[in-house]
Length: 294
Image 1 (cartoon, rainbow, N blue to C red):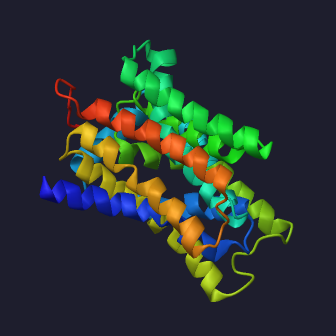
Image 2: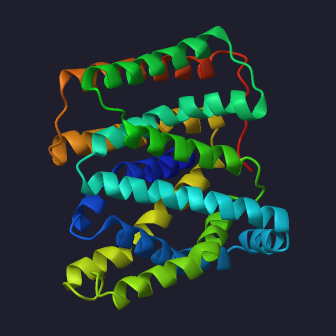
């Protein structure tokens, strides 16, 4: 259990500090950062899969299944969109708004469970969803702006998680196949940028090139830590500890990157946090099922 806590918290903290990393590349267009993030994730993913007989077996099984490949192609598109919109949010000083999306993700997963899997909610979880919806409604009413970054980040991440439930391939081998399926388009887009002389990679300075290349490792390592820790802990614990990630992202945007936090945003966040607290309590009640990941 202690090892599980250490691993999963390391992964969540890594994700939570993402804004500080992507802020190093705000002078590079978000699309190019995304393309290099995907391309440079591949070497480490190949290494992690190559070192594990279980992961190699899962990759072979997935490649032999047309159904599995179709689902992985779809989830690959969704996760790349999620990565891209988050990188754009950091570059455009929308980290706080993006963090709201990850706060909303667990509640969006609940909503998705109702719509997709026909799950039923008790009164506490209905109340949790109502609080979160009230927070978003207050945000929209007070600013006259739809928090589309939050909604896109949260809904894409929730959709990725829900669709992954339909896929038997685990996280690391699954991400490898997702990246491989998109690799021809990724490389073609990188070459297209270079052909138009719009690429920043190899054109500016060593630091820019280094951060772009390291982005692959920064992407894969927290995921590897998360998957290792999740196998050792109950899923309720895994879900509740996830709030470390958006909390750190929120603090990064507010305290380190200097984004404004006005009263209306704070009220909206307080309503969402209340919903999360109620939802977390509903998970911890006696009788809740606690299942370890495989």
